[in-house]
Length: 97
Image 1 (tube, rainbow, N blue to C red):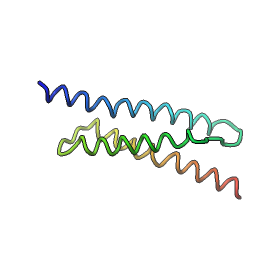
Image 2: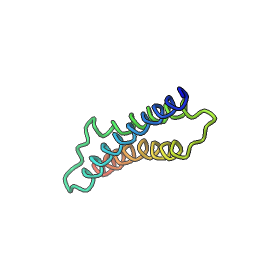
Image 3: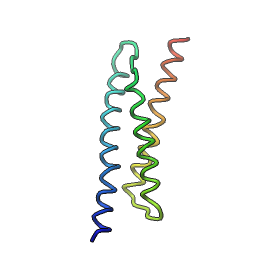
């Protein structure tokens, strides 16, 4: 009984971090759609930081269990880490060039 409850609580934390990353990614995408100069500030890097925390947490949680939902979260965590950094580098290249 305790093992099932702990597993539900363990999956709940990556789900909450995924929702937070979706929210921050929506703000980043909205900023990209806007025609003004990019002004991400520090909030543009919340998504990769939370994605990295979730990536590490899921790796510790997963162990030998291969749950499809956790693999889905891992895939999106990699996207959440790479996308804002790529957008930031692209923005710098546009400003320089």
